[in-house]
Length: 166
Image (cartoon, rainbow, N blue to C red; front, side, top):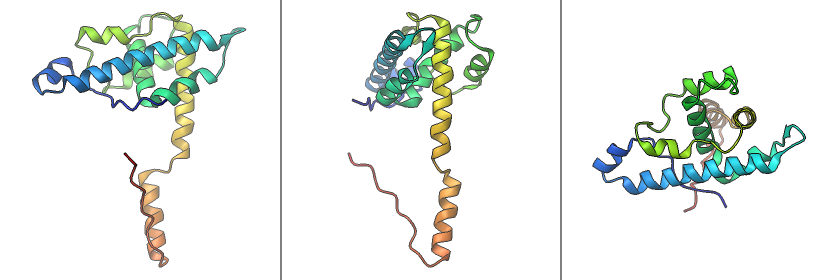
């Protein structure tokens, strides 16, 4: 079952001051559950010096790429001294400025710490690769607008996007 909890990017003090503690806690608990799922997937799918790509698929199907990559990025950013993480993944994690605010002690609770850092790095590399493939499949907003403009110019009706069902 897919977790539908939205990511909460603001710090604890902001959530407390603005009556958003419920959203903060829900996101935090979802981050912890995602961390646990990553650790479990690595343990279950690492065999014969190989991490089966099914590990990434299993986690992203449940939590989506956004939450999965946030948990992985926070783990790598916190442990940038660890040479078992690749320089590419460290640079990627450092480039993300809009991660949930690290100024709370709860931030440390969803760092991946039960899996070997080399395996976490491998999982992250696979997740980033799969995410890039997913993004290639989706047309950009600009392409969608251009396609609609071409349809209208050709005398056709523009494509209306279906609203998500709640």
